[in-house]
Length: 274
Ligand SMILES: [Zn+2]
Image 1: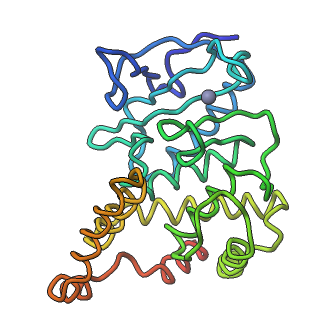
Image 2 (image 1 turned 135 degrees about the vertical axis):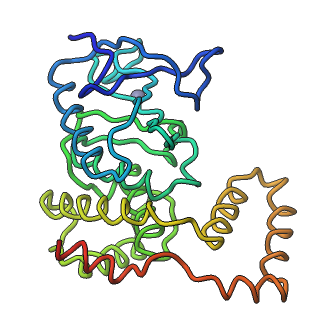
């Protein structure tokens, strides 16, 4: 075990306190961590910040490494990543809906290094990524968290329409096959080398897309996603109001004039040839 208060020179912060609440940059702290696990974490963050267009951050916020919990945390072999703070920008994992592309770019790289990555839609993980090495890096159809990741990148990065429920079915598999073909990756996804290539290309594409200006269409999609998380009692009324806004003659005329982001096809071509 080692005690660290930074990783690769980036300060490690804690923000789950009354005076430093979740979502703020918090304060630098020491954390106990397993030596081998630390090495993997260092390689992971090196790759994340080499690729991430925002570069090196000012702080990495963690909810804990070695903590009195069961499982890998009890051995200092798990990391809970709450947020990352750059000078002008931050990624707070709870805000996934508003920063999907940056979030998914980072998660793609986390998955190259850790067999277990529990993400935003996984029960009890909306406000942090949990990662550990208790299983090897690979894609298993039965893994709910990995399938949630796959369905979200298919939807938000590759523009496929799949239901995001963490269950791999014909729709998810069909869209995955289309994307693999487009990216010139051999199948199956369950072969580690193919999966790693998919993660790598997806990270690059997500990061480029994350630099685009957010369009009103994406803002509307974000609003719709937030509405879908409302409790049933409130949801119907709010979605009716939302739909009548979108379907209104004048607003729909305006919406149809808005160009959506980047040309995905030429972006994929440029990533494949770079
Ligand atoms: Zn955890």
